[in-house]
Length: 407
Image (cartoon, rainbow, N blue to C red; front, top):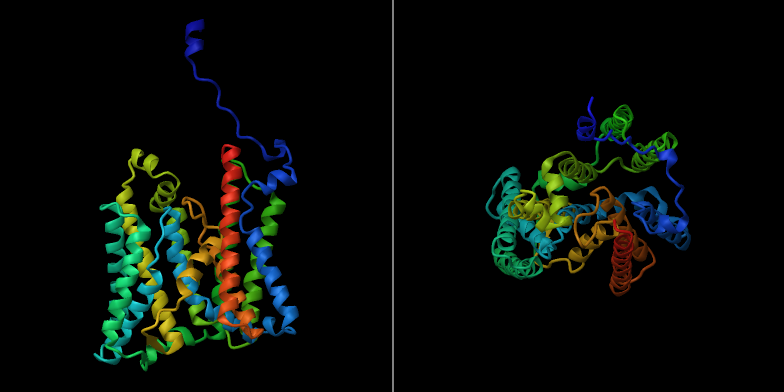
């Protein structure tokens, strides 16, 4: 073979770097990198330990923890929608108003118009989807900043729900199907079987993914770390099941919240749509040049966010047995705070829907623990505000440190 032909041949493929050859990172380097959910989990453990000590153990009783999980269901569902919008680098300030409006639509249709529960719930979800579609169109095509669009929408929807209630401050829900949505518990067979089945599927998926990456010569995490991860997840899942079963069982609303998070996780991580969402949030102009329809992605995400807000409103009305004309003043802050504390970046392109569970638990634990200590709304709002500022500051500092390292 001639020298000219040899020079045209491509260079041999570089082998994948083996983890064992990588230098061990220092503590300082670890602090400057993304530690995932570990800091949030440690924060939750500290909060739980504090309230357990200061309430004489009342905070950790099965009854209180079961009520705590029920309290964060609406926040968790709204935080899920807020997470999707935050991943785009946008914000939706209308989720609380949309959630309350959709609950009012459902209540008016069932209690005043005599509509069946199924059609009333579908009408509430359609109302939420329409509200999100309008927000998305204004943001994506008219190019109005999302905080202005959604702030104006929030004011308008607040007035619309007052109009629908026609001066009535509270409308009691009597429909048994709607009431059962958030107040029932799963039978023991399903309460134990479904989480265990989900855990086995998770373990199978993680092990299969590990084996496939090894066979393909790709970088994998150490086997000991993988086993530790599986053990931690198994302890958390089965521990939660044992906790619920020691009281009244697994709440039905927890299944709704977990199912919605699972669906969004699959959508974001296993479909091209999810990759487009992260790409648009990371750099919208680069995503557009890569052929991604940025406007369509924005419209779809805002529509999904408001639809999830509608689901949260339906569950809240079911648990409260009524719909009211007053919008919870802390609901919007709690939903965004749960997403940000869970690790979703306000700058877009970074975050996981599973981490918002920890964020919602932190928000719920603060409210629940301060209630047990007989603290008022003033103290609760000040504490939540400080926690949110700390979470945003940590996100900004991590972003700055990663930018200095060229990540």
